[in-house]
Structure formats: C-alpha cells, structure tokens
Image (cartoon, rainbow, N blue to C red; front, side, top):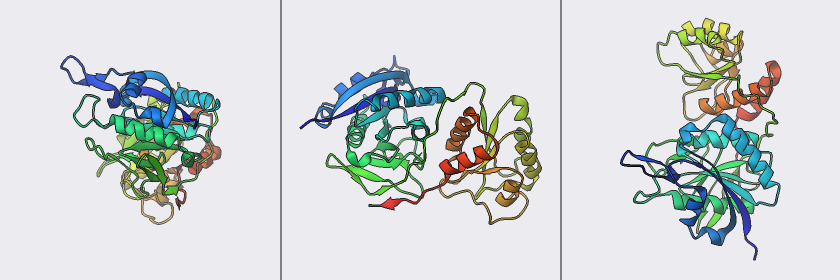
Length: 336
C-alpha cells in the first residue's frame, strides 16, 4: 500500500528549540532533525521536508506567510496529499488564519508546534508532529481549509485561539469547539466549517500598515487621533463587549473612518460584534453608522491581518467591506 505524500515546512518555534549557552532555549533544530526524532512518521506518510526559516513564532512576518502560501500551492499541485507547517505557538492562530485566506489548494494544510522545548521533560513536539502529519494525510481533512493540530485536537483556523501560556492543552476554539481529534493514530472528524473563497494576489504589503488599538475603561482616544499622521492605512479597534466604546470616543471614530477603513472588533473571546442591538453613543449601532466596519466573529489580531491583506490587494470602499464580511463572519458548523 502506497503511503500518502506530505510536505513538511519548518519555520522554527519552540518545537525546534534547545538550550543555548545557558541563556534560555532558542531555535536550533531543522525540519529534518524534527522528522528524525519521530520514527513513527515513516509509517504514516512519505515526507518531503523544507526548512523555510529558523525563527521564533513572534518574528514571522505577513510577507513570510505570503511566501509560505505560494510554496504550499506550488507543492500541493504536484501530488501531495497535504502539508504541515511547523512554527512557534505564539502566533499559530494568526499563521493558520492567514494561510486559510491565501492557500488556493483544497488539500489540507496543518499548522502545529509545541509548548515545550525539544529537550524538555515531557516535550510535546513529537506527538504534535505525528498527529499533524496524520491529519494532513487523511482524506477526511480535505476541503476543511487550514487546521491547527496540537494535543491531538483539530481546530479550524478561523476560530482557534491560544488560551494558555504554559499548558500543553493551550489551544481552543471559544464558542465553537474542535472539529475533531486524533484517536489511535487516525483522524476522527466531528464537524466541518465551510471554507471562504481564498484571496487572490498579488499583495503590495510594504506600504500597508494597520494599527490595533485596545480600548480600556476611561480611554480618551488620543491614539485614534494620531493614526493618520503615522501613515497607517487602516485600523482595528478592539472594543468592549459586543462592540462598544466610551461615548467620548465616538466623534474620534467618525474622524478616523473619514481617513481610513476602521474595523470594530471585540476583546471578548467568543461571540460576534453586534450590528443592531444597542443604540447609545459609542454603541455598535452608533459606531457603525459613523462608518466603522463590523468585525464579525474573528479576533482582533485576525481582523488586522484580514484588513491588511485586503488593503494590499488594492480594495477600498464597498468592495473592501464585502470582502471583509465574507471572511470574518461565523459560518454554521455542520456536525458529522
């Protein structure tokens, strides 16, 4: 029986880290090193390894992800069953979401990593890598878009979030739950989330900066006022609750929406930004009437990447609003 071919792209992260001259752990292991440490992988798939970079997750860039997406599409068109991207867990939810937006192929793309360094007692990297390759090789994972696999759980890129700084069970999909699990060496799919249509390049990212502004109780909004002077092209405001800001910021939001697209996101872990419930000054209805874009059901950091990519496509006005809404709203999860 022929084994599935799976592409493995290594970018660095905790899974590749070992002790570095007594000053903490740092990326040292290549993709080939990771594969050699898990001999069971040979029973699951025929792997082709590409070491893209040796970076911690926090140092990856959106341009890196555009290049990785292009590499994935090029390779997946040559007969691979799926692909695994290995990286640091700090930004896995962001990488997975961006790849879900960019990869054109229907083949599964799995993002994984580790919460413990490669030499740590109880290192979780080998098990996560084996589970990720198992899902990438599974026919049931096709057409689900990009997935995140850690701790034997399988999450949709649109909804997954890192919820703990230390636990090996650090990832969850607040408000949605996992799409499946790896059990006894096989992918068990419990649900599916329809993919949105991938974005089409090219993306002119160099001159497109998007600000993320978190608004606490009593904020006076002075940062909102200076964003145009700092050459930002767009902004995401992480608001309270269902999309609310202090009343005193409403006029500042009006001025900002006249200068750039402004997305209204929420700091709450699950649930969408409302559109037509609250009507007080600074409410979601007030801010949307002033020109803000409803953030949908995605987190503020994901909203930043989506807005930046749309701006880098050259979209503006109603076309940008429609494209944003299509890719930010929750789709009904179908259970199987």
